[in-house]
Length: 320
Image (tube, rainbow, N blue to C red; front, side):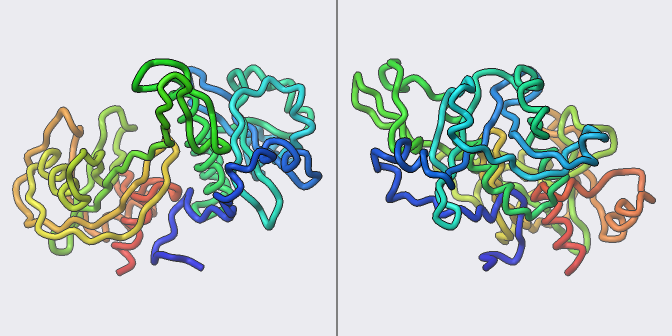
């Protein structure tokens, strides 16, 4: 059952996270030896990506060298001879254990090993583009990718500097030297469709493809509410004062582990004062502009890909 009016990509994880099993000493023992246990493999960091997911390919996609399939679940027994680094417990799929593991190496290191069985490693954005915005596997990918990348970047204790150990099936790291516990973090980001009257405001980030625009966004800072973060970011980026904030939906975003908090921010239309250190440009648009852009009859690309929450915000606006 949907919990929000807007369903975003990378949400809707179908797994039972089974917190009660995370401290079971057999979670990486007997549970992992079960015939119905499965594991999703991720390749480590490279220059181009920060963790690609192993997915299956159809016969057509092998010809086109493109991703069409779903997660390529693997029996843990078949992974015994793989160069596996960190392994975590994801949860239960109708009672069957599910895990995720990061291989020691980049996707290029394993091309020959996996292509024979009809599988490849692909970036999460590419998978989301092919599977569709609300596909349930994307929630699993977000969980696995965010958790494994956290372990990769938080091996050492932030308090004393000693190397910490994975505990609680991957949902905690414990420092043996100072006994400090460290837990996976999620960075909250506010993303807002700025509105005034019948218009909306969209911006261009630095380095974006020419002509592409999207909703404004920024990280929340310690000690501020979501609404205050929205007002601060809007003022910093375009110099407008927010009068009202309306929450719409949220989205897990595993690059590396953020929570996108999607809102509408109402402002009084006025002169834009764009901070070039924050964004490259910002423009007011109408619903007709968006419809023309969707028909490729507009000079700018005003609708982000369906797997981005900005797509959901803009679509909800034009469908009002």
